[in-house]
Amino acid sequence: MHDFQVWLVTTIYKHSPVADLMRTAWAWPIAESLHFLGLCLLVGAIGTFDLRLLGIARKVPIVAVHRFIPWGLAGFAINILTGTLFIFTEPDQYIYNPSFHFKLLFMTIGGLNAATFYLTSYRRIFGPNAPLDAPKRAKVIAAISLCAWIGVITGGRLLTFYRPAPCDGRQTSLLLACQP
Amino acid sequence: MILDPFLAWVESTTLSQWIVGSPSMFAFPGILVLHAIGMGFAVGVSAALDLRILGVAARIPLAEMRRFLPFLWAGFWLNAASGVLLLIGYPTKALTNPVFYLKLTLIAVAMVLLLRISRSAFAAEGITATPDRDLPPRLRTLAIASLVCWAGAITAGRLLAYTYTRLTQLH
Image (cartoon, rainbow over all chains, first blue to last red; front, side, top):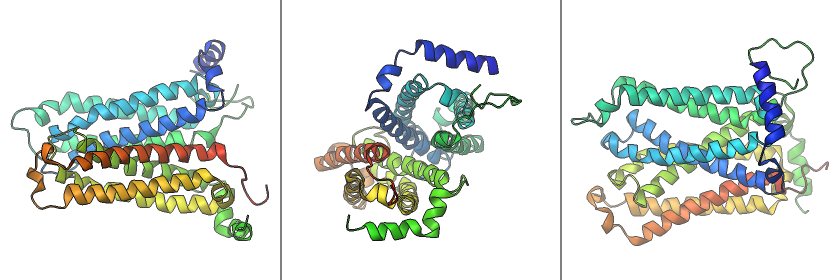
């Protein structure tokens, strides 16, 4: 993985089409603001749906609350886009940052967790005679989802406190977490 | 600035120096994390309510959206508390920056809008059955204003890192 990380950072630095734009006075702050707006949209939509699965507003059909999900995906898309802008401008500050590694880990958990939900619970929750109370498995998935997205926010907010220092020779972990 | 002696005193307190100076991840970084999570829930749930008023997820009876509001308030109070701690950490940085007052004003307006939206959307008994077309048109205006205020408050908050002129009394 170390070689891949170094290759990724070098390649992005060499070819990034957005670095010059992002280094203008206002581009970075504006992208950050959009990243925070996307975060709110994601938590507001996906978090609300998770809370419904967990039993909040239990008189409301689950399928009705699911209509918020596209707005959560829109927030996620905004954040993938703006997040890519950050990485394409300062790749080393992310690719070698342990906080970013954890952020990606929690994003992966959130994504696989959502996929599990649609693969295992979709028919029971959205089909005819859908119960108002979500099955236990869906509740576990909802709780994992809330935790995963809170983990993503935590990893993102802590990025700046784990800026990679220069490597001093020995680096044995799975991922490179310092500047080679 | 007339507040300088007071700001200097705040910065001299043990709490302020712990928040800013402690190497612990539970100090300044941890407070920032809580502030971001609280924002997600406060603004997120408020935006979900606004979107519902604007016609998204229209099959949710509007009055039932009130069940999610405790999470909005939890986020709000988490951010009030973490915000006060951040302010105690860097009082000069915030209070000498006009953008900080803009952020607080936008949050105050957003909360007033939320209270007016709540009164209008949740108050009347039996409004659960009211079809959307019978909602007061003013409610849609309030929902749009709420979304605009939150977007403004978030942007102002993010810009605080770029627009301050003095960090502490020492600078």
